[in-house]
Image (tube, rainbow, N blue to C red):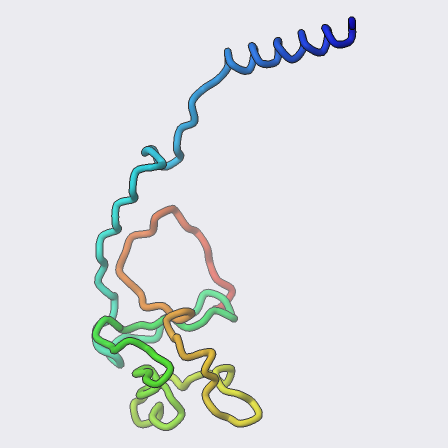
Length: 143
């Protein structure tokens, strides 16, 4: 009986102390977490026409190259049509003076385009002229 009373008193004391020091949670973003986020402002792509912008240097050796030109006027990439291949595919890259599609994008045995890599902008992203959201002193390992 004494043990039960002691446990009950300790539990009540814990609850009272916990309630006395209660502070409501405040969101790190400073707004009600249930309120919808504001849509970010639409940013213009840094590059305009393909072939008019310099190649953007990679910040680490395995980084997929970024797209230095605008892609908003390109058709949607589908399994049957991909406008990126018109310039970067093995048939036209020399004539168009554009970087060649990497060997990793082809099936090694048949030397054909790997269909699992058809969505170019999944890894290769166009650049926008936007200020950094946080301070960044990162320097890549490519010199």
